[in-house]
Each structure stands twice: as C-alpha cells, then as structure tokens.
Image (cartoon, rainbow, N blue to C red; front, side, top):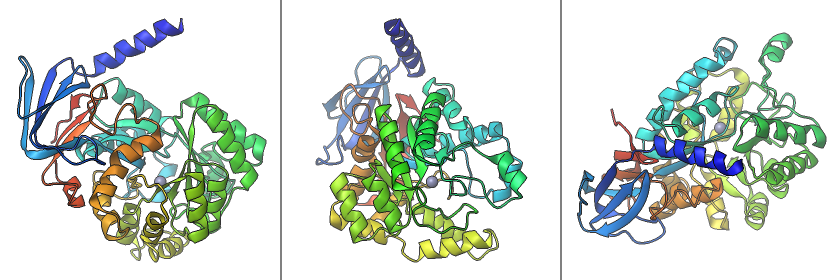
Length: 423
Ligand SMILES: [Zn+2]
C-alpha cells in the first residue's frame, strides 16, 4: 500500500517537472558555493533533475539550449524566513477583513515574485489558516509558478504573545484567534501534533515578544523553558524542526538550550546567548531586511504606538547580532522576513550581510544555498548543483563570490526543472 502511494507521488512530481532536456550553458559555473567557481560549463537537465555537468558550451541532440555564456550560473537561492501570504503595505486591521482565501491569492502573486528574484526554495514561517499549505501543494504539483515551500502554517505562541491576536476588543481578538496559543508543556505538545496533522513541514514558535504584533509585553522570553522543551522534543520525534522567533537575549538563550533548530532574528543576542547557540549547534537566521521594512515605515503614523516603540528599539542594534554570531562561530542561514518588506527584494539581504554583518560574499552565498538547505533538511535535494539533485539553478550578472550584490541581478531562474517566466 505504502509503496504504491509512493509510486503515485513520484508520477505526480514527474508530471510537474518538464520532460524536456535542457542544456544551460554558463560563462562561469558555481557548483558549490564553498568551492572555487568553474569556467565555461554546461548543466544538462533531464526530467527536472541535473543529469550531468560538462566542460565548455555543449548541446546534446534535442536539448533546449539556454545561453547564459555571459553570466554566472549557480544553485537556486534559499530564503529560510518568508511570509508569502502577507504584504507590508497592509494595515494591521485588515486581518479583521481579509479572508484566508484572499491571503492564498496574495501568496500566489508573491511566490512568482520570489522565484523571479532567484529563490527556488523558501521556508514560510507564518500564515493564516491553511493558505501556505495550499500554495505549497499547488506549486509542487506544477499548477502555478513559485519556489519549493517548506511551510510552518501558523505559529505557536503564549496567550497574548507575538503569535496571538491582541489590540482589538476581546471578542474581536477571540474571533481572530489562529488556534496556535498554548499554556503548559502538555498543551504545547498537543499544538505541535495538531499542526503536524494539518500539514506543517516545520514548527514555528514565537519564543519572545515580537515587533509587529500589537502585544505590549516587550521583546524578551515569553514561553517557559519547560514549554519550549516540550515543543522541541515533540516536534523532533515527528521529524519536524523548530524555528524560534526570538529577539531578547535571555529568550534566545532559553530557546537554544531547549533545543530549537534555529533562532529567527536574534536581535539582542549577547555573548552568553551566542555561546549557548554555538554549543548547541543552533542556526541564526538574521533577517536584516526586516529592519529596512521598519526603517521605511517608522515615524509615518503607519505603526500603532506599541509597535513604533518596539521598532525603534530593534533598529538601534541592526546587524550587531550577526556580526557577533559570525565572530563566535554560530552557523548562519540566509533569511529575510519578506512580507515585512516587499516580496522580490530578498536578494538585497546579501549585501547587508556583508556590510552590517562583516561576512564575505562567499560566506553569504553558502548561507543562501548549501547552508540553508542543511538547516531545512533538504541538502540531498538542493543547495548545490550535483547530478541527481533537483534542477534549481539561477544565472546572475557578475560574480557573487566577490560581489554579494550580484544576487540582485538575476537574469534566469529554473525551479524544480521549470523555467520561471521573468516578466
Ligand atoms: Zn517573520
């Protein structure tokens, strides 16, 4: 029974990828961001997978030739922190009006924008209802264009925390309750199992307060350590990783000690918190671009007073945690928090990681390819251009191993073997 089901899934995914053979001719080829680039090479793609890589510009009989001889071809990029079903221009009260179905369609628009920006995989860390599950499945079945999505669904939060709904009349808060709050180890374990049952690929928790919610209880630790331990052990037993939104230093430390797989933002991480992250092997996903979203909107009467105050506090230390994390030797995975800023600008994170975080362009590219693939647990499928892996590749103008901004000059994208229409 199980075997026949797998065969059906294999047939479905083969249907999604093009049966066509492609010869992508590269001027320069980065097979693995951690190793030196190659000169002129051709990547042969068959049935949606990389079948082989040949030196020079070649073209097997019957192949569709993609001429990228003036560009650098590299693995498709991975953004480990997006919110595809939300847009930054949307005022907070719109959640009282917009349906989950509408959010799904916002996600269809943003999935294409994100793929065009060179991102062939994203991890979506928070959306309403089942919107990202529908989006993920439609893309995987080849119905619409977009990146592969590793989806959390909703987030686990304390009552009145960042992932709960606050700021309205109590009866309105209750009506908008996303069903993700929990109190105590048992109830938190139950929530993990509920999200697993609904279709989550990863568990997202808001382990500290957050900037853009209407909760006014600051940015430090919210969950009790015993609650987080219950979440991580329950999730890990189900084969699910845990991504922890965390700003305050002690909240970061608690979450890392309790075994979460990544700290999202990590804004106020201090030496003690970073030492725990290093010892526990916890990844940092810096989301520097989120602060450009704040910067563009602060002082303009867009945010409510409670949000405005938190935004100013977070902006004051922009980039500091990444700089210290790199010095400490904490593992870093590329992630932007798109949705807080405009989708499609994800690649701008790379230059910020160099400028504010002190990373080299090569370190940034590793974090956005093989590094993020490792965090997401999909290193066998994507992250490098190896025969047998999914044909996730892009072409950019310039050399991203020397100039991180080259990642914003994307001229061609193939996601899971499908060429993405660029306009
Ligand atoms: Zn986020």
